[in-house]
Amino acid sequence: MNIRRPAVAGQFYPGDAHRLVNEIKRLVNPNLSKQKAIGIVSPHAGYMYSGQVAGITFSSIEIPETAIILGPNHTGYGHEASIMDEGTWVMPMGDVEIDNELARSILENSDVIQPDTLAHQAEHSLEVQIPFIQYLQPKIKIVPIVIGGFGFPLCHSVAKDIASGIKSQNKDVLIVASTDLSHYVSQSTANQKDMKVIEKIEALDAKGLLDMVANERISMCGFMPVATMILAAKELGAKQARLIKYMTSGDVTGDYGHVVGYAGLIVN
Image 1 (tube, rainbow, N blue to C red):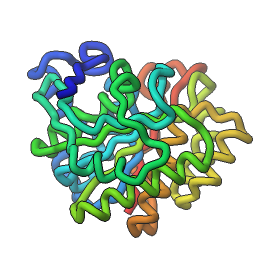
Image 2 (cartoon, rainbow, N blue to C red):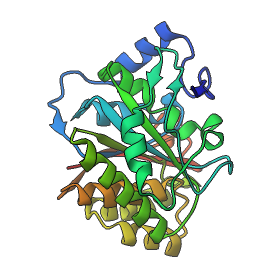
Image 3 (cartoon, rainbow, N blue to C red):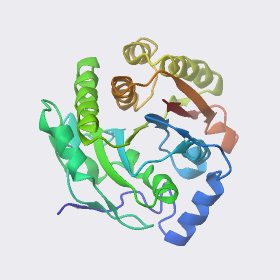
Image 4 (cartoon, helix red, strand yellow):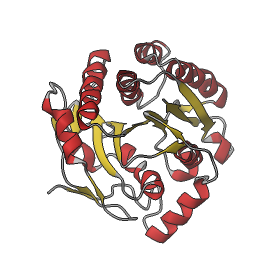
């Protein structure tokens, strides 16, 4: 049994369960009307910076009992697409089990996704999503996938495997793509470049998103997970995407010279 312990509890979010619950309560809105979603985009910075965006995004959807969480590989460890196909994530608010049946269905015919724990050990991009999901859906099981490779063919292959795995299980699954947008640029530059990214996501244009990030040199860390989520969601019937909230770290700190952008979007 693989046990994955928190890497950034006490740094990106409170490591104490009581304090974490209070923080999540402050960031979510239980009064929002909830819609069914196939996928979402959610940021993964410290909660003081991006928690407002993540909170309102998760508050706007019905969260099923299984979520696939896709994140970029910040550490460089592991394979180009690394899945944990069994085990438990130990979190401050309680343990979260991996949905091993869905994970193995995704792996069954995959040429690129590999069972791997190394890529997950110190990676924060998936971990910071879990407390929000866990608070709003206590029965949650997860399938964590870290994407470390690049290029549209990899996105397409992983997306096909995810969609095929979900179809074979015949149950509701949420696909969470974890990303921040522009990094350490001015507020005006972030707004300009991030809106171009958001337009591509709203158009469900995965290839266009990858091309935009490359051509415009946009420092978006999770473009591969987002493009993969878009392709999988379209395979599962998604027709539209909608921006829920956009802000930057400057809106929190008052430093508009070097900001990081955050966006929450719903795909359905």
